[in-house]
Image 1: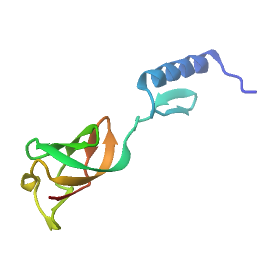
Image 2 (image 1 turned 60 degrees about the vertical axis):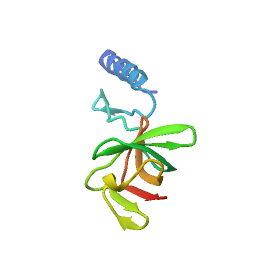
Image 3 (image 1 turned 180 degrees about the vertical axis):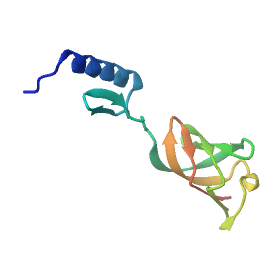
Image 4 (image 1 turned 180 degrees about the horizontal axis):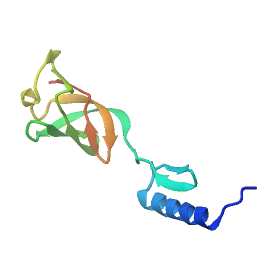
Length: 118
């Protein structure tokens, strides 16, 4: 049996309340009797096959996969290919079939790679 003093109990209650507010994917760590909320990361790596809907400038686009819509963010580290050739996002067009890989968080994929074809 672990004995918890009133100060520790207060920290635990605060941590549980914070965890409840943070939702799924949050982690509570206890360090030296104090509760702290670790970075809540719900980002899961995914591979999504779908159709490009609209290019939103130089760093993102929307896509549809089945009934779901996603926003896809790209950056200088994202590998983008169209019909086997490395291209910029501006070369992609609505209707292109795309396969996007990267972490998904709240409907947004931060792409590590985008492979497109007609």
